[in-house]
Image (cartoon, rainbow, N blue to C red; front, side, top):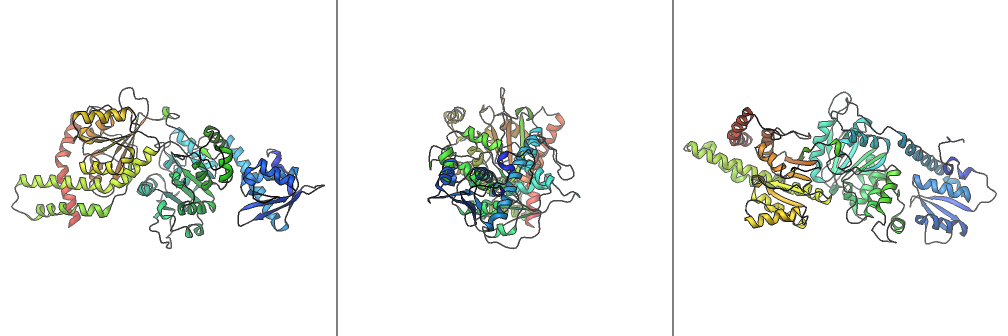
Length: 581
């Protein structure tokens, strides 16, 4: 069979079908190990083990090759020089494997010539991508197993949704950390729809015990559930799988890792998303890539021997060479903020919905409910007493909201810090700050809460600005006058009703001389006071937003803000009363 001239010579011919004056051994498939087994003369197997370290076995006269599209090409090349007889029962499988190897090379070469940007159809995608996000979409569309490793805040989620919409890749399975479940739901609702304009149906998988899944276009689940669904998920036959924050799978040998690998193995298209695919050990990238594309980097032992400082060592000797190899093979795309700075505004604001602890929220709201009962039923209260009680109710609910979502806020901040970001974390209540202190103590955070004396406050500023900590927790109402421009991210764990307070907090990092694009995250919960505060600030979930405070406010706007502030507690109380009726 004549193959296109574009194929490299080692793939153009099927070595198993070539006439041979001498056959050096046999080739067979081991289904249990998912590998091809060469049993041949010592001159052949010794050469295999020298040229392809992953093929080595403990047996004389035997070598094994992983059943991977890239490796099949190597094996065919070897057989052109040392002909092997393919066992009759495996000839059709070999022909199919060689076809897949050729298709892999064709697609890889076509990708190098393909358009570098892709614009999603407006009938299925309602957002707008920047130029570099269009480049990311083109990358996702042209490869079926890949790692999008852009720095945090550059839009990996929206690019992935654009890909799913463009391919109409449903049903799809998205696996993400628990604290990002609600954000994925909101992003899906915001950005993608079906060609007829109807919404995408989403089902969030719950619990460790498998159950019959209802029909849906997209299924969401978090990593902690994978072990319970290990046997069930592969049987459901998801063709499209997305692993958000795929560094969660950097440790092999866990039920989570093996379950994810089984799901990925059976999928047609697998995408990994991570701003930090490699943590402490460079060899962790093998686990990440291996989940996406089994044995793309060979087996672990040969990878550590050839790419790291010796067998079993986990430190990659030349990470830049490994990165270039992954990019050239079309499996990796990574952009940093510095790479795309010209496409970014000076400040980017992103509102992200996170979960909250409903049980804790209800418990913290018990004393608030008692004050509400007083407001409802005590006719002897004076106007001033009602005003005080209303403010107590407002403060009580805001604190309950802050504490209930605090576990998810700290998870989010931890991911930022692991990714190398320098974070300002803003909150309002001291109890919320105390929770941050306990949960994030491993990062040795600095604190500026209004409880410190002048010397302690200066020490906190110095520690952060000199790089002795990458996390500074600041009270929303204690931010004025601070100079903390080392920060690359601002996170609002709690919200204030005043836009000016938020703008002033952002400006602690966004100072004169700042050349980076500052990313400001507003973390909001669906429960509690956040919904009212969002209305006050004009925040809309899943949008980059421009808050008031960037430009001098008109007198009309100042009056409007003052009026809203005076009515704020009253509105919260009214809503709470409605909820408790």
